[in-house]
Every structure is written in structure tokens, then in C-alpha cells.
Length: 132
Image (cartoon, rainbow, N blue to C red; front, top):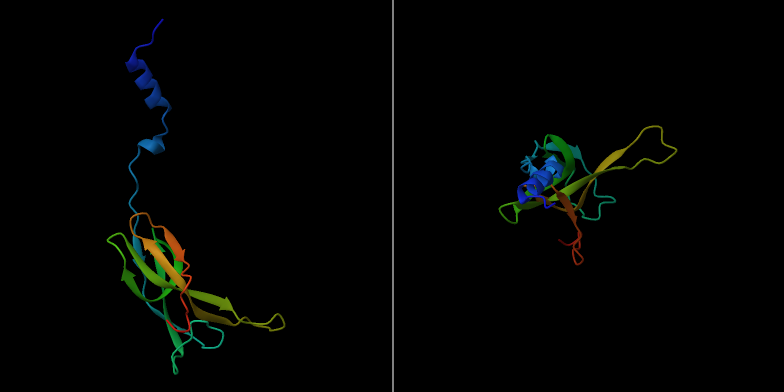
């Protein structure tokens, strides 16, 4: 007995995952407010200006959650994406220290896609943080 095409179509739709039929959820990407954090030239491969004592950091918020910490201005690449510099917080204390000593440093560049909310670290082979 031959099964009609409409029965096959109904069976396919019944078995197809609901997630595949749903529209893609829009993502919200924003940079938060600036915080002034203590900053030290020592140990930062990106270097600092002669009298720079603080680093302006701000959160990169994707869908209401902090994904990364950034520093500096954002630079548009396309209508959907932009780049911004990552800010890294490191524990600079020794194991024998009683208290923790946290320092901020400039990190690698990030590529952020506004439509998908994806954050990608850019590894630039000829980028010299001490010169650039």
C-alpha cells in the first residue's frame, strides 16, 4: 500500500524539533558604565603612559549578563560587529601574602557580533602591544 505525500509531510513536521521551527532569538549587546580601577605599568605587556595610574574598565553585557570586562573605545567593523580591548584582572599576590592584590591589565582585542551575541578573542600575529 502506498502512503500519500501529505501523510509523510505531517509525519515530518511532527518529528521536526520545535527549536528548528522557532525564530532566532534577538540578542542585546551593550557596554556598561565606566569604572576607574587602579592600574600599574609593571607587568602589563601593553605598557602604559608615563603618568597613568588608573584604567577605565567597563563590562560587556550580553543578554543582561556580564561576559567580559573591556577598556578603551569600541571600533565598528561592520553593521553587525565591533571590536574592543579586553581588560584582564589578575591576582598579583604571592602565596605567602595574607591579602589578595588584584591588578588590571590590558588584554587582547575582542570581536563582538551584535546579532548573535558571540564574543571572540582576536589573535593578531603581528600585533605588538608595547608599540601599538
